[in-house]
Length: 96
Image 1 (cartoon, one colour):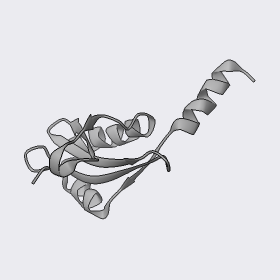
Image 2 (cartoon, rainbow, N blue to C red; image 1 turned 180 degrees about the horizontal axis):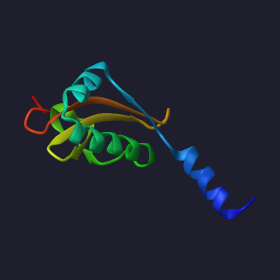
Image 3 (cartoon, one colour; image 1 turned 180 degrees about the vertical axis):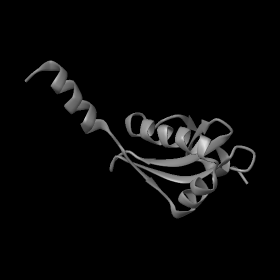
Image 4 (cartoon, rainbow, N blue to C red; image 1 turned 90 degrees about the vertical axis):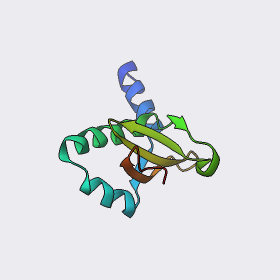
């Protein structure tokens, strides 16, 4: 098999599925369009490498990703290769 094709196939097998909660979808629709495109790009990036900042305390087991002034809170299911987006909010409001 051609080496570049093998690398692409390996990359595809490592990709995660990204799913949004209904709460996250509603929040995303309310965000200004200039930030929406940045957030969509970040969600696509999560498919390749979902681990970013691990949260502690009340949010233990969750991860966060900052996109401009917004923050994405998500959970990773490594066994199923899924990333579940829980919240997308302004960084001042996301932990409330």
